[in-house]
Image (cartoon, rainbow, N blue to C red; front, side, top):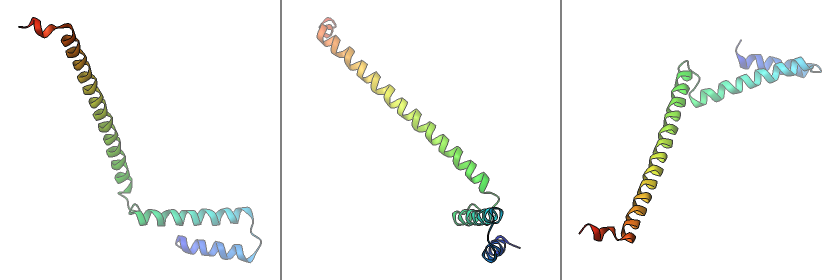
Length: 102
């Protein structure tokens, strides 16, 4: 018996009598399991390789985040260095150090 048949039988059983908590819970569990399987199938994640695919995607996303973080750190580092270099050149010009080199 597949999940759709099991769910149909549970719903039919719930319709014939006053449903108790256990029956309602069974209906909800079967319906949610069936819905989850359908959603995964629509996303293409219903096969055996899906776990590895999701793991690979998580690793790729982590690597992308690390690379982005490193790139921003490098940009900030270079900006600070350029700013400090401009301050040093400005101080040298203000103190007349280029005249001493002649």
